[in-house]
Length: 313
Ligand code: SIN
Ligand code: FE
View 1 (spheres, protein in one colour):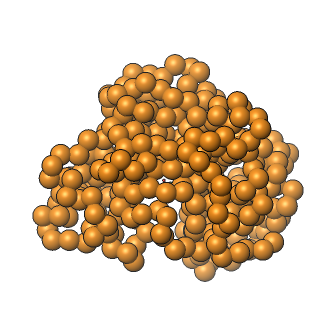
View 2: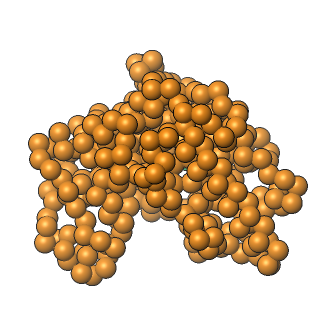
């Protein structure tokens, strides 16, 4: 496998379907007319779409900043040594730069997004409510296009989310995003093919799991907990996708421009995605046991267990 340093340019226009089977691919996004963060339960078809790995897109659901907060729309508040500005559930702010007033304002703004994102998920997905575990909220004020990263950290390449140091044994990664760009700049994503298609493509070339290697990585504290076979395979998919430039170019995919004033939500461990451009976004991650899904058979854990024919955790 080769790991070239930078991806080839992608010939993509906003909203342009690249795959001949445009209908199937555009079905990876479901648009929902929702303009408030207080929401009622989604209909079963929308829940099934989310749990099938589709992106739920809310074109009219805006995270609105007040005048004071608008001055936080500058990359100057971001410590470049840290990937994103983040706010923990305990309201601990990390990765931010500025005077006390700026840090207080950032905490308030990101904290408000944390509450609204939680309110949205609680309202739309009531069965999850008791079982969600909140991860830190992130604010991303840097321009995506000019970020310099290794191929593995480069989210401009299609991937499913999986993190080398944080094994999760199948726990789901549900994410809510809002574009807060003040200059009309969309957040442009590519959205790829369904998870089972990705898994069928990359599993045959995945390196086999090694129990002793997982133990070694844990002993050396490369991982925070023991990497399960599930975690290993998810990383193999993540790395397999990102390192394969032909796949990046040729996989069925669509480009989607999320405009400022819109929000979207997906299981990012399942939806193949890449961010191509944009600046100023808020993001909330919520974790959920796959056992607590409406339909647990749709999780990456269930799909990978079916494809490999054995238990993975
Ligand atoms: C990602 O999760 O890969 C990045 C999403 C974004 O920053 O828009
Ligand atoms: Fe990602």
